[in-house]
Amino acid sequence: MTPRKQGRFIFNPASIKEVRDKLHLSQQQLAEKIGVAKTAISRWEKGLITPDANSLALVYSVAQEGRIEPLFFKENESQPKTARSRLVVAWDFQNLPVSWNEVEKIGKAVKDRLVQKFPGTSQSLFKVFSSPTQLLNNSGIRNEGWRIQEYAYNIDEELDTQSWSDCNQAPKDTIFVLITRDGDYAELMEDLREKGVMVYLMAPDDVNQRLAGTVGKKWRMRFPA
Image (cartoon, rainbow, N blue to C red; front, top):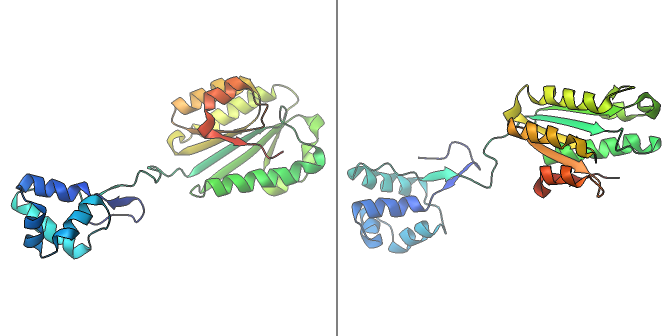
């Protein structure tokens, strides 16, 4: 009768009224049966206060007279129903570069923001996709926990393929954040979402509108540069 995890379950006011209705009891009659004031029953049913454990036990005993199994607690819809433990981040540096001397600072800002936004994740993977000419290997971004994926050709294909593989290890347990402005990744985001991945887009204001529309406003974050 008590919630299994604090915060995940909350008191269900309708359960008290359900017991009364099934047993054809008024608020006054139920109050007399369990030894509380009628106003207490009213406040419970309105969700103004939560009954203590003893009161719930008494209501449960009354419910058992009619073989009723009341659900005193319900899942808290304001809490995520499933906590996701994996965070996968892909930065399309080829199409969304920053100046060489700003790379480490912005890389840290992005990582800190995402770790703060998704505190329940216990595994994280941060990748930045670039070309050799962008000289990321000479920057300090690796110090901030980013893995540099450097390719002379087909960088977008590598990002697509690796992100698909990284997320599909456990799609329904994964949050994927794509950092880009390129509309060619709209299909990747659609496909990952269909597989059960929770997808987010971090982008500047001039992001491709097809990509922005695919992800949706609720799932967008502004790129900090």
